[in-house]
Structures are given as C-alpha cells and as structure tokens.
Amino acid sequence: MADAGVPKTANSGGAPAGRAANPPRPSPLWALALFRSELTVTLRRWRTLALLGVLALIPILIGIAVKIETSDGGGFGGGRGGEEAGPAFFPQITNNGIFLVFASLAATLPVFLPMVIGVIAGDAIAGEAGSGTLRYLLVAPAGRTRLLLAKFTTTMAFCLIATLVVAVSSLVTGALLFPLGDVTLISGITVSFEEALLRALGVAALVALSLVGIATVGLFISTLTNSGIAAMATTVGLVITVQILDTIPQLHAIHPYLFPHYWLSFADLLREPVYWDELVKNLGLQGLYVAVFGSAAWARFTAKDITA
Image (cartoon, rainbow, N blue to C red; front, side):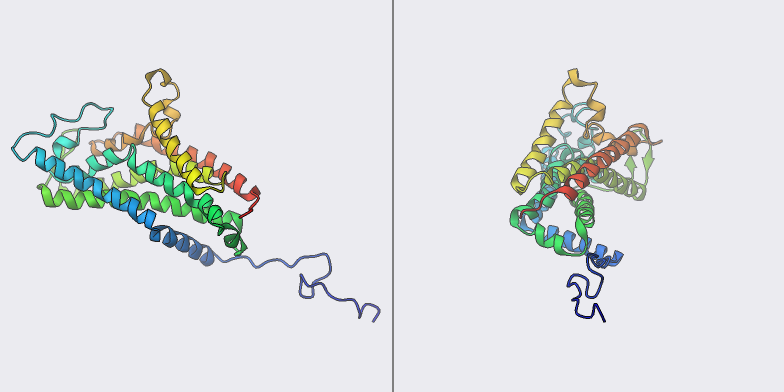
C-alpha cells in the first residue's frame, strides 16, 4: 500500500521506472517487404526509367550501325582493335546475332553501365536525406542496419536488372537484324545455339557481379553527404578517374587493385575450356570492395547524425 500512489512510467506501460520496454523485433518477412518497397520505389522513378531506356537503346543503335555498314557485303570496321578494347565481337555480329549481346556488354561495361549504377547507388542514402524522407524511414522498426541492407540489396538487384536490360535488348535486336545459329567460340570450338544462350546468361551474370564493387563504393559515398546530386557526381567522377588510371602504363602496379581492371574477363567464359584465372580474380576483387566499403558504409550510417 505504501507505493500505491506512485505513478508508473509512460515509456513502459507498467514496466519498472528507469527500464525501457524492448521494442518489437521486425520479422524477416517485414525485412523482405522493405526490400520490395525500396526496389519498387527505385524502379518507378522517372530517372531510373530514363537510364534503363538509354541502356536498352545502345544495343539497338549498335545493331543498326553494324547492319548499315555491312549492307554492301563488307566486314565491320576491319575488326575492333586489340585485346584492350575487348574481344573482337563486333566483326562476328553479322554471322550470328547473339554476338550483339557480347559486343553490347563489352561496349557498355566500361562507361555506361557503371555510370548508371553510380547514379542509383549514390542517390540511395543521400537522396533520401536531401528530400527529407530519411528520418521518416528510420522511424520504422527496421533500424539503420536493416535499412542500409535493404538499400544495398536494392542496388545489387539493380546491377542485375540493368545488365539484363542490355542483354535482352541485344538479343532481340540481334535476332531481328542478323541470322542465328550455332556459335563458334573464341577458341574456335562450335557449340549449339542453346549452349551459347546459356553462356550468354552466364556472361550477363558475370557483368552484373562485376558492378557490385562500384555499387558498394557509391553506397558508401552516399552515406557521407545529404546531397544526392553530390553523391551521384562523386561516384560517376570516381568511375571515370579509375578508368583513366587503369589505362596508364606507369601505374601498372596498382591496376590489379582497381575495380574495373578485370571487367572484360567475361570473354573467357566464351572459350573452351573456360579460362577461370581472371574470372576468379575479378570476383574476388569485387568481393573485397564489397567487404571494405560495405563495412565503411555501415559504420558511417549507424553513427550518422540524421538532420533531415
């Protein structure tokens, strides 16, 4: 009876004073719903649709250019020069339309694909902060770690979506403009069209995985600022800078540590037998970037003072 008049604390609904009630833990299904919501919001933005439209248009323009140049029966440009420019897929397009898939991925991977990924990754956190919606997202029971994980998985999913847009557009354009059939691989072995399609799918998967390094770097940059434009510009600028560094012979010692160095190694999947050396190096390098910059993004975001 001595403590009958003591009010109970409002923060616990009857819990002892000084002890906060444990907040309910969100279920895994809620985390999946958060990822689905983030991916839907990303894909519905006009900017995202415009970027995907540009990626889909590039293979069409390449296919039309090859068709026009070879309409007189001649070859295409005398071949694309050298291994540094990527494997010579372009001269093979007229013989088999599936080579337009490989040529388009080789053409978009150095610049267009990473720039698109950089825009999406750079805007992931900074865009929310700049628009004032980040604070409201953190009110949800997900917490900062789960929200960052949802942003990360959304960006990774977009890497695959962007790559598939290029691949599918290339395959459709190649089928409409050029013949299809058995495919002669780089090593000179001829395989069926069905096996070539499986290898094309593998190439698309490898290209998507090649982009996860820059995607994670962009996500980290996005946690450093409240300006989405600044984060996107910094990420895209970094892509261009690193690409330039990777072409300077005097810096050959650091080339194996730059995220784009092994990007064109996907061509080794078109050999028989497959050359795995650079493919494994590429995947390992991308994994290293994910581990380092993913951890840095988590450390920054969980300690970030949310003011907007």
